[in-house]
Length: 279
Ligand code: BJW
Ligand code: ZN
Image (cartoon, rainbow, N blue to C red; front, side, top):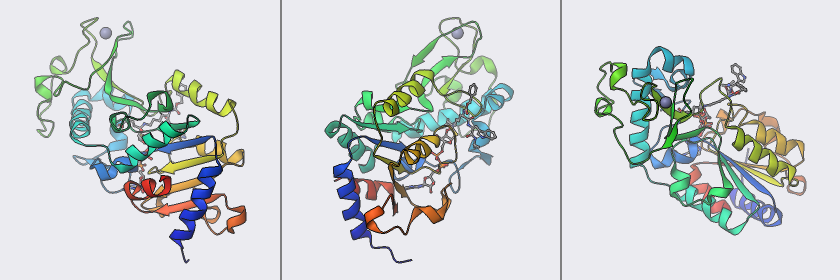
């Protein structure tokens, strides 16, 4: 199939200009060029563990030492990484259009560090820099993006040594519960206030366009926001380095004449194509 990227960019620009309510659903591919690995495919392994198997409440319950070392390494990597041009381009779009909202699945804090307006940024899967107590009797939670490592035992996450529970981060409030990262694991509900704010955006009017950036779209309910925009006849623009990796039917992705065009696919690094598309 012949792809005319210049024509695609031109028709996308005119759609962008005529759209008022715009959503972005972003995933790990947005931060790939900042040096942070994605979950699925190459880079999705950590010490021979599938990253997906570590992102569950069961994994934490049965091996908190392993899971804390995984998240401690991720905190360190995210603190070292810098936002890329796509993070900045989304932040700029938010400043220019108060009807634009970013739904991020990322927990790396890079959109916040790119100064994305916070009232236009929803963290569907929480943050590596939120901590919460695991005790049933305690409601403690805190935000911490300054301390690394959180305990001396987590200083070297690459050492494969088992860390006894006593040396993992503990709750300062109840002093007995283990702390855990404030991220959303499989089987856990997304934060209620976040779901409510996303729903409110849909309730406020038709969403004209959704930008689907660097995500495989394989995790729900995050991926369902794309379906919701499609169901309202909103348009979809996909930014992904590997279009074959997408959880959507290829057939419908491309090939419509420009006049009835509902979809764009920008195949390549999000850090390159998102700024081009949003300029
Ligand atoms: C580039 C690029 C470059 C690369 N430029 N592109 C059937 C069985 C079991 C469960 C379910 C089921 N059906 C549905 C479920 C529920 C489950 C689910 O969706 N499972 C599916 C896997 C099937 N969902 C849940 O459990 C959710 N909760 C829930 O449903 O609760 C219900 C409930 C209600 C009431 C009470 C109780 C429960 C929660 C999902 C939480 C997901 N959490 C994680 C971990 C977060 C913490 C952490 O970071 O460790 O979130 S999993 C992981 O996947 C992470 C990501 O945010 C998320 C999405 O991944 P993402 O971002 O799309 O990354 P990749 O790697 O998949 O894709 C990267 C893409 O970028 C690729 O396409 C590349 O090509 C591309 N790319 N470089 C542009 N430079
Ligand atoms: Zn506690």
